[in-house]
Length: 351
Image 1 (cartoon, helix red, strand yellow):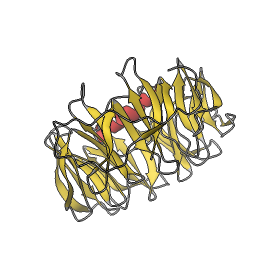
Image 2: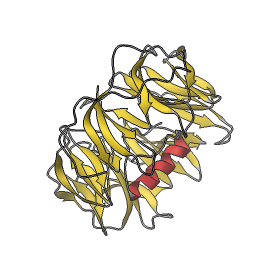
Image 3: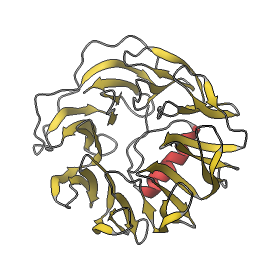
Image 4: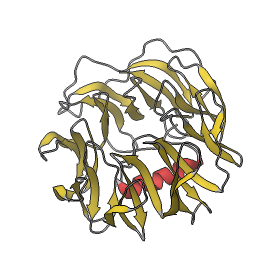
């Protein structure tokens, strides 16, 4: 799980490829009527009684924006990207449309900008929906800004190379990588010849491209995989490239506030930076913590339900959703889906 913000539309293809290669997190994709005022309080379904090991607190997830969107993303800077029919726009925390649906894809806001595209025009908009960066070269894909830079792919959508632009839309790092991720702690994950390493803001590899997959640095550590991308093991390195937690997990994801979710066999749990198991691996799917809660799935991908646990491993929001995304650390809302992937609708619950 190295990249936590979910992007949509055509840009989601690249994000998904990076995510699957780097972290193997395979939750369902997201999922419808015009935006309406916030809904009255509603509670998710009763948790599955066949899973007694989950202890539930008194907290519940209160639906504050009614399920009505075909896709719904993470709130950031007070806004969230949503899809209505075939177009993306942005809503505020009351569920009101702030930027009308008009884009073919959209990402969450970061550093005051959101990556969007409509027709052949791709670039970055401000909070009013106005394009403020429209690079004058052929962009095949683009990510959100982080530490003043944004990863973009220049050239053909499948064979183009990744580089970085600055906030003026100028190339800061020449396109040269097969894939690339966001900067964090001064480093960004990048790939050449099917190997992943880390570059600095000059575009130079400071941790050589050597890993089968790798994720963004967070809390000073990054999850990387050694060996085969499917059968190898994942561990955590520091910014010098030294292993702090040896490769031993079937999958490993970013540390957030001192905890990282890992997969052991088919189950997900959480460890701390000393590699101590803090939450036993018993979830069928787990996401990173955000705002003190993490989405988990109880049951299989087809019929299982999503809820949220707290950092002690207790169920804070009962499993009653067909999909659940990250809680926004800044805005305290999380996108959830009621119904199946094809016909279900997305709304938002409160922290």
